[in-house]
Structure formats: C-alpha cells, structure tokens
Picture 1: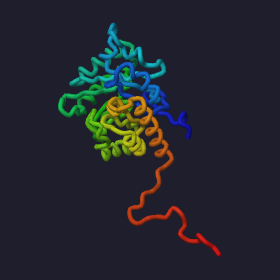
Picture 2: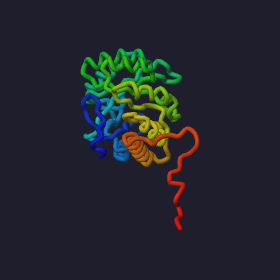
Picture 3: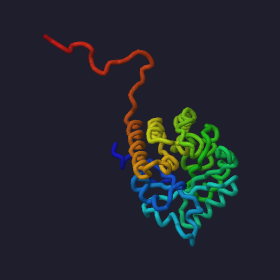
Picture 4: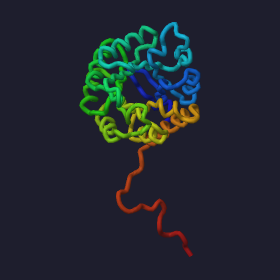
Length: 258
C-alpha cells in the first residue's frame, strides 16, 4: 500500500502523515524547519503562543497546509478547557482541539472525568475533539460516546521520555476502540514510536524527545522514518513469534549433493 493511500482520518479530514508534532518546547525559529523534516501535517500549539498582537506568533512560522491543533494546556477542569478551546477558534485556529485537563501538578496526569465532560460539550459545539487521557478502557468508551474524534492515551508521564510504560493498556484500547488511537506523551525515542505503530496505533505525537535532542531537525526526521516503518510493519502483518526452540530460516538438508 502506498503511503498516500493509507490515510489517517480525524473528524472527516484526511492526513497521510501519522506523526503529530508537539511544538510546546520549540523555539519559534525551529518550528517550520521541524515541520518540514518531520513531514508533519498536524502541529499542536498553546493558545498563549498565538495571541494577537504579540511580538512572536507561532502562526507566522506554520505553513498554510499544516493543520493547527490548539491544546488546552493549563486547564484544571472542563470549564477552563472549554473556554480555551473557544478562544482558540476565535483566534483563527480552526475547529481542531486537543483536550488537556490536569489538576495534578506533580505528575501532570490527565483528569479523565473532566476530559469526558469537556469532550461532550465541545463536540456538541462543532469541535473536532482529540482528548488526552490516562489509558482506561471504560473512559475511552465514554469519550467515544461523548463525540471524540480519536483517543490519545499517554505512553508515560508527559515530558518524561520514558517510552511505552502503559503499553499493555494502550494495546487494549487499540483492540477494543473503533476510533484512531494516537499515542501521546512520554515517547522518548524513535524506536519507541516505531513500537507503538507496530502495535496498531494510528499515529504518534512527540515533542520533548525532539526538542531536547542534540540535533532537533535530525531527530524530527528520525521520528518520521520510525513512524513510517512501524506503520508499514503493522499493515504488512508482523511475523509469528516462537515461544520455545527455534525455526531455521533456511532448510537444514540438501546443502551439498554429490
């Protein structure tokens, strides 16, 4: 299957890239270069970085063909998240929104119940809602019923670069939820992004792993290639695993005939 035939669909919009680039820790002069190296078609932004009249506006560094994904970072409850989402739309950021609601300031774990409330209200108001959540099957089902466009479980605590600490729970969501599962937060290496895609994740979002790399642009490209490789492996069908013993890759008889 060609990459342009394998599309990620969110709220009726089609994307050929399965890499969502978080921009929260980038300097603005690196944003455009990283988008190009990553091949990203969706980039997150905090509303505070798109304020009208500011000295520097992330919108000025984002190509026109890239979809903006405002997040509600800083919201402590559904009411605050809804307010931020509506403000982002007023600023011209469109109908996409990533819901992030965190009351916990130590571990920055998402508040799943408040996230469900915000998702329902914003979906009713025409937003394409992409909720960030702690992987829990029942919560994921509630988010589906609330009108979410996808489910975004964390792989590890946000900004930790620890990888797929919640791998088993993410796999349950992939197996049981019909919406795209996008692994968000905690992915620290391209190999971990590849593993998430091999599991059947629809996409991966990364920010800290790229922003803190020695060469940001090269790391962005490495993530792009890893995500593409993982997706190709998944759709082609991974080879079987043998629990005991071994299986020769070539016949053990008939090497030499005299």
